Length: 65
Length: 151
Image (cartoon, rainbow over all chains, first blue to last red; front, side, top):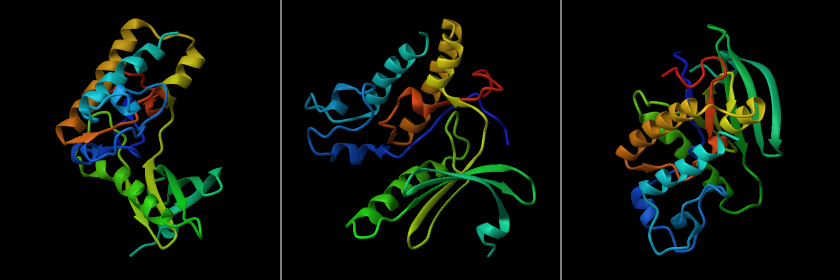
């Protein structure tokens, strides 16, 4: 099997976009502190693919210490 | 149909929680190593089995991808009456935050490589209508042997 340098793990909380639209308001989804405002329930916006992109930045900031 | 015990040899096991178990197994024919994650049903808790079944189905969802870039792909998912299990190919390595603890710091150039690969993986799953929702350094696996360059 070909080895990869980096892989995304844990799709336990993953959801389809339709499922994300049906989520009740104010529900927190994800791991603190790597959450977007929508995932925290701070805004009226629903979770969408842009939430994942928001989380890339705190992850990249956590790398160099 | 061959059972798991016939196909795999038990190597080493450890419990994360009373109901969560991880077993390192070896395929008898090829000697390839796999990590078996299993969740056992808790008796008397209503909806517990359904919740776990949903989790396993979600984790197994990305098995449909033919050649996912930078996404860990389970080799097999299966369920019986009380236990739901996922079989992952075993690879040496650790999460990005553990690598930071060991190395102390990662060079900016190397960080860019990591970010690029994470974005590739996200682009792939978003194109298929899936949102990860739990992106954090613990869920980014880095192969210690190859480094971020291998693709």
